[in-house]
Length: 121
Image (tube, rainbow, N blue to C red):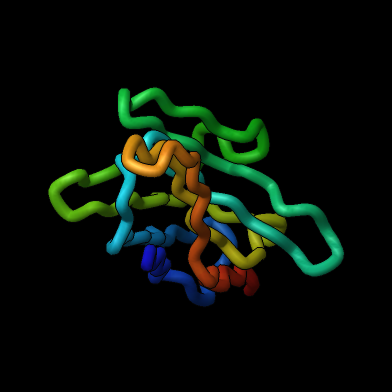
């Protein structure tokens, strides 16, 4: 069973920084892409950063220049480094991974439970 676990959320003042971590275990497929998504109650979930197994990255316009996604294959982990945080960045942040299993010819998408980030003075 796939386990996706996020950590690193918390309370930070505007202008501050946080690094979120996500580890994956139990996957029977090669992860092809890692996403960090966020959601505010009442709003749609938004993808803020993506990194592929080819190290291609993509960011939402709202976080470009402030957020950096990176990964550590040896640890099966992905990170989201956030600087110059703003109150609008307050949300639950989710890690999402996806990949194709050759064994059962199925594409999988898995999510963690999320970690809360609060940006407030």
